[in-house]
Length: 262
Length: 250
Ligand SMILES: Nc1ncnc2c1ncn2[C@@H]1O[C@H](COP(=O)(O)OP(=O)(O)OP(=O)(O)O)[C@@H](O)[C@H]1O
Ligand SMILES: [Mg+2]
Image (tube, rainbow over all chains, first blue to last red; front, side):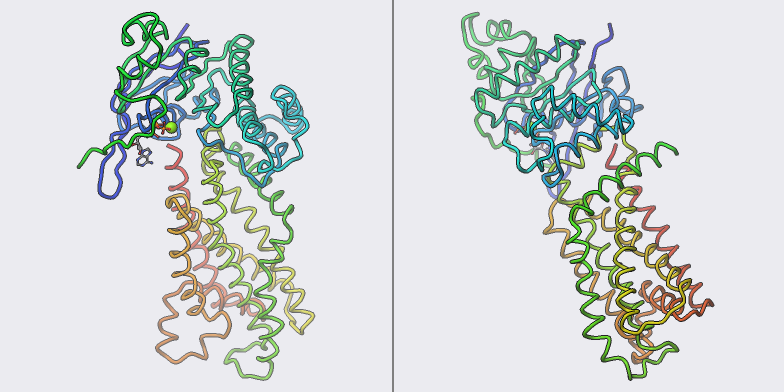
């Protein structure tokens, strides 16, 4: 079975007025089909930038990648048909109704009108949004918004789902629900899930494998147990210890990263 | 190609439904030209405006172009807000044609402008405007083409900037001089020579003159020139808009 994602030397440099930021500096990774991959790293490590490249939103400065069986550069449209993406800050219009957003999304994936209407009901049922369908998106709570964001990304039953910090800002109950949902998507549909998170307990509980990035590079990868043993000092060490050893920073601490001077 | 048409239809539908849901907004956009029509129009009745038509045939076309200029210049604002909510990125992750994201919006903008223009002309008729239907229709098309070009420039700008603070000053500093210099309220025929000369560098002026001729039923050289300018402007700005939207989809 070919890998769901394979990247080689993926790089992205941002040029702003008077500085250059090397946000991602050569990332090589492979994600197997059906895998739940946790992508960890401190603020500014390059997680979102990597995700935006893998989802065709941002052109890599250099490097190559195959995503969901299609070449990222040569066939972005092929990639888009097969992936779902939930951005860090979501992506629904506050003034539009939940039903309208779900239906339009389905139409953009070329479902006919009746199919789109049916798919909307299905997704609403699946993600517990049925009672909210007529509400404008602005009238949803944080957790409900998240469920809608995910429903939007699942419209076309993608084989690969990208989630950028899906549980940030959710209460413990909603977080547990979301973990449940991600596990269910993998079990029932064999979906591959690539998720970034700052929460080590989340990475520990949910991901089959972790990739820790720091400063635009892969600092380590392996199962949670492997990372704890290798970098935390012992198999009984916490993931926090491993994370600290790898990045020199506490997880979830805001860090100001010095940009590279030109 | 059929992809592009279908996608454009879907995107246009999304925005048309949004516009219909806020009918008040459509009327609100019409408020300013209506005020001009009702409170400024009567002042012009017995003044020699230097043109062939009567005062309503001079004012109403000007107000139509002004309506087109203002609404389309600020069209990018809505895109900017959507961008800030992450809507644009969400749309760009779908296989939708990048160009349809621009064209679908333009379709809505032009439809909305036609609805507003129709209302404005009807009020004009109530006040005494008399014009051939064909001329009015030609005028609408010209204003529609002009508005689509400007809106696509406005969207292109909105794709490139990150905040309303960058967007608004650019639009404001271009829009007002354009309105003043294209003879929208009063024909440039009344202007001193230097002002008339300057206004020849503002493309909208030719469109205003052309719409006025159309409203008088004069289908001649002025109309042809205005149409040519509108089409050239449309080609240039749609080309630019397309490039910006395509590139943003890399
Ligand atoms: N459009 C941009 N222009 C300039 N610099 C950018 C841009 N996007 C990201 N960066 C910079 O690239 C670096 C990586 O940012 P990125 O958003 O990928 O980090 P992250 O790992 O997702 O962080 P967080 O955990 O805070 O979400 C940061 O230094 C950021 O300031
Ligand atoms: Mg991020």
